[in-house]
Image (cartoon, rainbow, N blue to C red):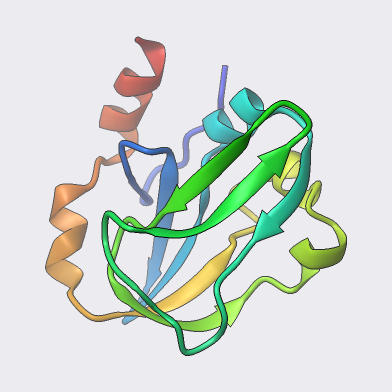
Length: 126
């Protein structure tokens, strides 16, 4: 059973957003990392890149597959998780602790389009 954390926002494509003020920490969910298997590479945007909700911002590659990362919210990348360059497997160890990018959100109303923990848990049961 994949772990789901209360208080985060979840997208249909299995990314999450942890909101802290005007910033959103975006990563893939525990469900997603289980589905992918051993992560071997995380392709991330550059700081100052703009990401748009619903658009691709990078990819996660595992021994089994590559999966595009889809931004759950729009914003400007203020930080990338550099640890993942050398240790992409951190995503497998704890997907929620090891976010991929931190963005300054440009439209917090986009969060309303995302699922809460309960809705996401229902989706992943299907």
